[in-house]
Length: 319
Ligand code: CP
Image (cartoon, protein in one colour):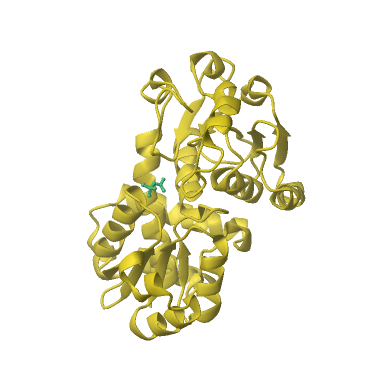
């Protein structure tokens, strides 16, 4: 079945996932459909040797729990070998260039999963490799996280089209990635941040143009109550992202009224779900009552990282 699914979409073979901006709505839907099928048929033998003989490097400049483990498990369950590369203990940590590292890795492995402080790092690696590069988080984008979120939303509501997703907090990589996937899948995305912490105007402009073609919409506001009113999905992220630890105290004060708590959740639809990419800081961006409450789908969301990554690796790397 997976062989047939991947054969149906040869355009995905050998592709990189740096930003979902580069993927069409049909391609994203195909990744989600395969992920859903893999999850429903998790013990089906056919997928176990799909990437047999392949090797994929994991090159991480920042800490990770979910991404590292879920990529390793996804690769292993498809028959591929994972090569762990801790940034600081490679020659990158001693100043070897990204360009040379990319050229060398291309001679050893079949793909690179990279988590980097700067988005440009992933772009340079992609430019100088001959193998697919998978973005496992940068300061600009977290594509596999929002693919997992889209799968979670589809499981709850039967699809993403016309879903109202409201994100509260910092205009960071998650805000950008919600704008991108929302625009691709025809969602109504609202981003609520304090003034001065909004998403990149370029990404907002791009998302508005893309949404005009898919039936979605983009709203940017600094009013958290207006943002969550009537929402199907309420999402947040840490107020201070990895690698962005300057001006922390002032930022946390400004962010306080964007905390997702019971009062804010009550303004969303009664069947609304809560998402958080994790790790979470209970009492800061979200209260324990919300993240541990009945509307929270964060554990399904975390599990779905595995399925969207497995789907993507199969589509991109299978022969
Ligand atoms: N959500 C996420 O990317 O988690 P990790 O930082 O633990 O990988």
